[in-house]
Amino acid sequence: MTDILRSERAAEELAAEHGAGDPFAAAIRATRMAMIVTDARQPDHPIIFANNAFLALTGYHRDEVIGRNCRFLQGPDTDPAAIEKLSAAVANGEDIAIDILNYRKDGSTFWNALYLSPVRGKDSEIVYFFGSQLNVSDKKRVEFELDDTRDRLEAAVAARTADLTQALQQKTALLHEVDHRVKNNLQLISSLLLLQNRRVTDPGVKNSLRGMLERVSAIATVHRRLFQSEDVERFDVSAFVRDLVSDMMGAARRDDIKVSLDLERIDIAASKAAPLALVISELFSNALRHAFPPESMGAAVDGRAGEILVRITRQDAEFRIEIADNGVGVENSASSGGFGLTIVQLLCQQLKARSETTPADPGTRVVVHLPVNGVHH
Image (cartoon, rainbow, N blue to C red; front, side, top):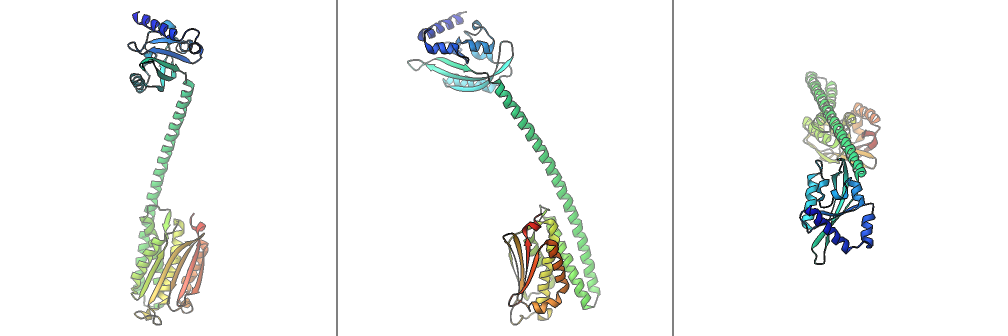
């Protein structure tokens, strides 16, 4: 009872400062926004003024509000962190704007957009706290619904991503297994061809078997590259060329020929890897075998040291694959590489590519123009 009397006296003092004719006080009483005033000079900051809008918002009568700290609006589901922020602002004499869950007299809840501000006297001492309240339950409900929708969408996206990742991992593992088995089978075929090549004596047959062995080895190199790659859908052509040149030079044992590589990295679809690999293999084999005949081994061609250049670049909408040598020249080498060149022409048609064979003065230059769009999908 004593606290209520003190609050009433504080309210009278406030009214004396802002009389009945004070338009500011009249506006506070008449506004539709809920407002209260607490006395900062009394213990526990009791409410000394509450306008009709506040009473309508909370469902309390005026005599149930005056003299009480406004924490009576808090309840079981009020966020403790929000309460702590509010208490700290009051203790520090600071303004605060915060959304807090409050309870009406009948137990129903509402979201209160609370703004609390200290009012200082002439000596700068805080004498009152002025609080305004706004029911923002509808806004909060929309926010919660949006948050819930976002959470459900994020969960659905995460679940779908996990499913796709798992499916991709399974697909990749399966493709690796298939490539591994194909590679093993190709190695078996290579072994059979090598064994057969050792048993025959006819030079023409041996030459044909050696060509087939090189083609099988090129395809095996493709599958080895795919098996080693993390991305089984893309094929690094330049890396393949390095492997191919190393393997073929090692098998040919032609130390008299120098090979130069100028390779810009290009990636193509794995489905295009084998035919392109065969094209490159055939062209390099032709240069190795026919531009520098075995009888010239150990000696330069017309006084020149043997050289082969392999260059891969991208120019606008096409890849340019060039294999050039300084050997005996296109006129002298064409008759020896007829079947290989036929294979190149057929595979270029499959790849929608075109090849050009021109003199290199000295030697021969073959350039394959491969459309970018044709090998990316």
